[in-house]
Length: 200
Image (cartoon, rainbow, N blue to C red; front, side, top):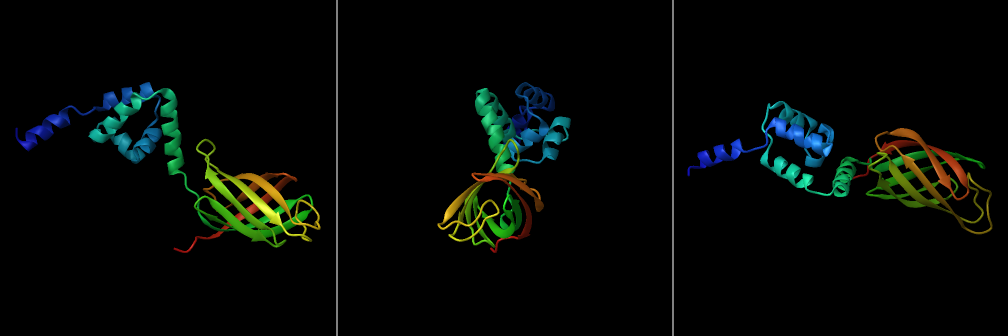
């Protein structure tokens, strides 16, 4: 059989727009979600649904495989595709923060899931961030190590070094914003501003 005939026969059996619509409906998939799962643009899915373009074979194969997964596994795949598309603007951030014992400022560096920095009270900041597929925010967990004799916005100076454990969230899509944090010494707020990207 000639190659062009084989291609023509293969092309005929591809999923058509009605089959795609039915599959998406049965699986509860929106165009945007399918685009994320397949790592294509929403425009590509739209063109398949209107029949402007044929559904590619790999896309059809993925949809068929996806439909055979248990519902819980499908949900995990959707969440994973959301996380894969979320990004954090790694770089240097300026912080201005307030707590029950006053205010202060410092700098934080976000780099590949890690956070580190310092503040004017000589606090050393170390922690991590993860991107949450449900909230679309970055979840921060930071430990601030305060040296002996230095005050924190959350408490007076101590004769020994001490730690503040911080949990907070921030919107990774914004260069300027407010973080509401919970700590082991009470709540605190911080204004953040993206200053620059990390050097290559």
